[in-house]
Image (cartoon, rainbow, N blue to C red; front, side, top):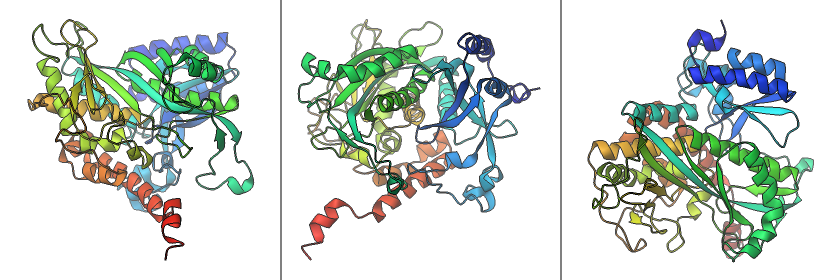
Length: 478
């Protein structure tokens, strides 16, 4: 029996999808298949196998070292893996041992930019068939299972902003191969400051079309391509999908954008606020609602005369507000992302909500008889791990429902309303998460300790660097 069969890892839909995968590999004469998983940062990692070997690995599993899930954003392993328990008190994580990537055949794609290449998303398991507790896709699956037990499903649409530059110098000299490597030099393809004008869109269209066509060929639910206010800044929006699909879409989209841009002489970055003159911060707005799995009805839509949200929707909203500070570690997981939380900036700076107001953290859209009634969380940055971002939303929202929390009144003056401020730094957010008993219970204390450790290592590296600001401020003065 294969690894998948021995441990019962595929649902019927996955087994059925495997037949279609084999047919596609033959029909398209694929030569290689990339087996990928989203790591703790939402970055795709994995191995490329020859097509015949990959088909065996779908059911048999593919080994990959445990250190892949023990790294910070500089790809430095931040746990002492060669000590007892690998720094995590787990023998399975010791010594750089192997874990198993198991393909999810329902995610299989033919890559339009890589000749005769397929791609599939994987889940992580220990060699005895247990899910790896640090796998972010498994974390989201557990949250979705909690919803399913209530007869509910998660629905989400994505608005993702990023910057697209002309690549001038990739800095590929041997001296540039530091860890992390020297950032590339870029120039603008749009001067910006003309939000949603056709002139600026036409200026960016030749570059955007490479990406747009690839995204459509992947079958991702693309809805629109837009130019944002900032120079060389754009936004792709995606139709609502359910369950794991929104998060799977996000990780594949980000990876596709980076690869397609690079192959066509551009540099795309989802970094929130790049250090390029006059650029604007980018956000990731997550539109979310719950649906009744039996009827498909939107559970946030209120009855006529029942206000903006149903009672269940108000409870979910209150949960997002109540846990916003600790959840910031997942919605905004980088040091750079906190430079976006500014007053009067179309980004939130405090945990509040409002009806169709772009200055609040959670924007409420819809109302009676509107099946698209939803909550738009505007706190996220485009670099967020989508599995952890969405899982944090589900757990926080359900807590608000279960405890009957009230979100309070709509904040019509969002930057003047008295409310808890969002963290001002990643360190503050990580401390809020570390001290939060709710997420320790919802996600597991072991996972929170693991995640906090990785992020603290990232912060400590940043603290050890001498910034341009410090050099200008003190070097000549004292």
